[in-house]
Length: 395
Image (cartoon, rainbow, N blue to C red; front, side, top):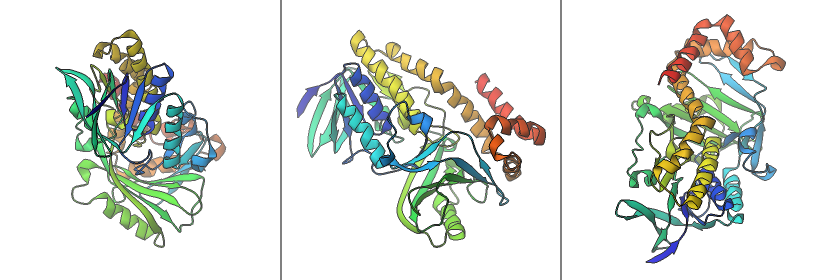
């Protein structure tokens, strides 16, 4: 059994792992990043949509990993109406395999050592103190000794459980999802589409994210507590038959997406969780790439500072939580309360929302304008938002 020493071991080489590793290495920490698959970015279990402003602080924009540029979002109501939302910034649909690889390359250039086909199988302890990671690499069991472990191993996070962190989610805080990457469809290339309604996707929505040519990611997420009698694949297949009967499915993925506002605990002595592992996901949309990168940047910096200070206690590492809460965590909590309200709204509310969007001219559209129009056109809808906001402040 081989041993090697590092300051920090990062488990998982997705956006959260790569950014955390890079930020720590830039501050002089020795970092090992472990990825259990043969390369970063596979398998793709993601709709691949991000905002430009969200990723720009972490990586130079490169057309090679952008499949489509998005200028608007189209909402489809349960009664068949649609409305476009404009002026909310540029969005991208990524080629995740290429994007994740580039993030890994950036980490490696700062001095991060990366191993692929390296499957973490447990944490090492000295008494109750975490002292490293045990992993299997091409059939050989190895141990990487370290002062800090950063768990960036996704929604299934074994790292959190190994450390005694409760990572369980209530059924209504996880969406069960299916996505097809399809070709052979005639579709606009600069807009994302979202379909709502209890007959379409109860407690969630169907999305269409265009990619290159006549290809798109078409997926569905259903609240876990509503998926027992009829699963997401059945709803998605009905939608495909009705909307794109000639589409050819090239790729299918299944998975769970956390829609909680975060774990109560994701930091202990010598360990931090980031990204999906810490449930740092937009509770309304289920998007988590930008959230993961923001959290990882903070975690990587704090981890490096703890190495310099010679203090890897929970008390020191809690700076990560404080900075995350200040930057985005508190907003996530508000959005979670809004999700609880929105996903329980009846179809008539979604119909009203789409009609309100229809009433705003393209050149005037903004979320502020939508709220202003909603105040006049549907005060009950505004009340839903206000109650959610107030409730989040009382928790």
